[in-house]
Amino acid sequence: MGYGVAMGVVTVTVTADGAYILEVRAKDLADNRDVSPAERRWNLDRVPPVTAITGGPQAPTNSTSATFSFTSNEVGSTFKCRRSGETDFQSCTSPKTYTDLLDGSHWFQVFAVDRANNADGTAE
Image (cartoon, rainbow, N blue to C red):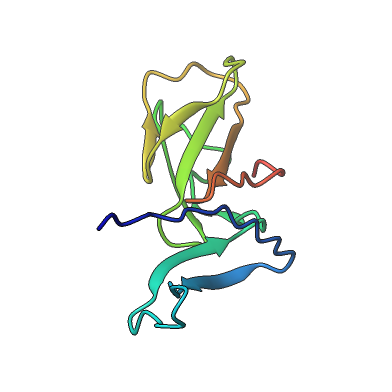
């Protein structure tokens, strides 16, 4: 006696952010049903995190170093930073310290990227 395996593809379209569960049960031609469904869980997250700079140097200062602290409203976010004189954002962690700064005006920007790879579109 041979056994056949039936396979199928299910397409599920979800539009609202949140947690989802898809359960699938097998049923044979005799209407016997699987008592423990196969399960797949996933989260849809299209909302970018919000980045906040929570600390930095006072202006004006005579220090040649600057330390910035920052956070995101989403746990597990990573960060990208850049400062005056840099064109590209680089991965960074809080706190971020720059040393050997020259006299003059300087700026610092940072943005968060959440675990779903949504990036805060407004660098602080």
